[in-house]
Structures are given as C-alpha cells and as structure tokens.
Image (cartoon, rainbow, N blue to C red):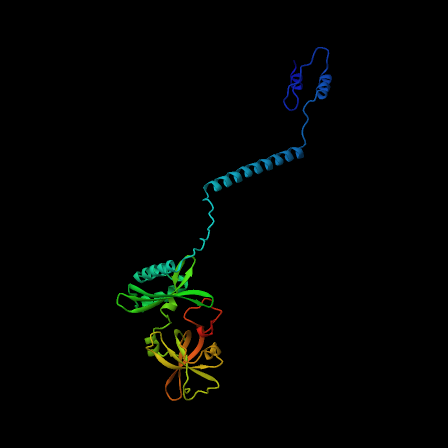
Length: 315
C-alpha cells in the first residue's frame, strides 16, 4: 500500500476506519464513515460550559460535606445545654428563719477577711469597697458571737427585714439587719454598721467643707435656731451618731433636697437617716454643721429612687 493510502485510513482524530475492500474507492469509504456517525468536533463554548457546571457542582458538594462534618463534630463535642432553674422559694417557719439568721451571723462574725464576709452580705458588689475601707483601712474588727438576744421581724416600705440584737464574746451589744434573698438570709451590711464615708471621730475632727455621706439619727430642734439663720429660709435639727457619742445642732436650707420630708418628722422622734453633711464658716469665726441633702430615711434603702418615709408615718 502506498503511504498516501495508509494515512487516508486514519481519520483526523486518530480513529482507524475500516479498510478499503476490492472494487471500492476511497471517496466511497469516506462517505460511509460519515453516515455511520464518525466523531464530530464539539463546539468550544459547549465544552467550557460543561466544565464550569461540573466544577460548580463539585465545589458545592464538597462544601456541603465539610459543613455537615463540622456541624456533626461541633455538636458532638459541645457540652450539653443546661438551663439554669431558679430554686423554688421555701416557706420557713419562724423557728427555721431564726436558726438560719443565727447561723449566718455566726459565720459572718467568724470571718477573718473581707472576701469571706462578702458571701454573707446583701449586694456584695455594692458593699465591697465600703467593707474594704471599714475593715482594712480603718482597722475595724468583728468579735465572735456569744448569744442572740432578740430577732425581730419588721416591714420596711413593703420589704420584710429582721432586726437582730446580739452579744459578742466580750459581752458588747451589737445589731445586724437581715433581708431574705432567695432562700438565704443575708446581712444589710452598710445599715448594720451605720457606715459613712468617714468615721465619726474623723468627721468631727476634720469638719469637712465638702458634703460627706453619713448615717446618723436626726431629731427636730424644738429650741431656738442658731443666731444668724433666718427660720423662714432655714430649718434646724439635732444630729446624733449611732452610739450617741456625737450630738450637734445642724442647719438645713428649706429648699434643699429632702428638707420638707425632714420637717415632717414628729417632734421628739429619733429617726435613722442617711445624710450628706458638711461644715460652713460663720461670720463669728465658728463652723456650723450643715445638712446638705437627705439621701433617704433609714440606713438602708431598697430603691434609690425613693427616699422612704419616717417610721411614724407607716401603717
């Protein structure tokens, strides 16, 4: 066979066609091959479209597998979800309440540092700085409990509290105020120790010119107002500290915050209050105690938006 004939037996894509039989021409064989469905070149746009669709489907399938595997792994390793459930309130008898209050008071007085004490007080996040100041900076110490003298339940502005009188091992009388929080009975610490921004001896000695928060008792002054103050613009009161060691006449402007509430206190009634106090210079060279503001009645306030009312006005 001539070389030309040999090459004609191969189509352009390298597929061998059948050989030429005796009596046939090459043109007849080519025509038959075309009729028999010889391969035709596919358009480029169609090939590229098929490749792109295949790639997209492959990437999508791999992504689905990866996402499913991650979710399965994450769910497998994740800790089981737990829903915090509030413990139901327990109804305590009077005896059970007093037992729990006594136990809490004993534990509190036995504490040796502020961190331990915080677990037995109401609103520890609020009391922390004051307790650090009171115990660590001022050097105050609690004395271990000897015995409980009295536990008295009371209602303060719709909130039940328990007043506790006790004797420590040194036979010194002390007081604590308790409030229920869930199934615990916790100490209202600031009100129990009548905490103020300054110790009373420091307050009296330094006589600060800027207002200082102090817990004290207040009485209406039934005597004459101090010289130099107009009774139409100022009211006068007697201020005492918790132990009664400090007693002084104080002046308050009638338009000051809470003045009208203090003026409504019945005569000769001694009311615990939380005040902003300061001293002012007088023209005669002395310094006068000034009530700058009434923060609230009582030494503990449940809602800071309410100044409360004197006990005598409660029914």
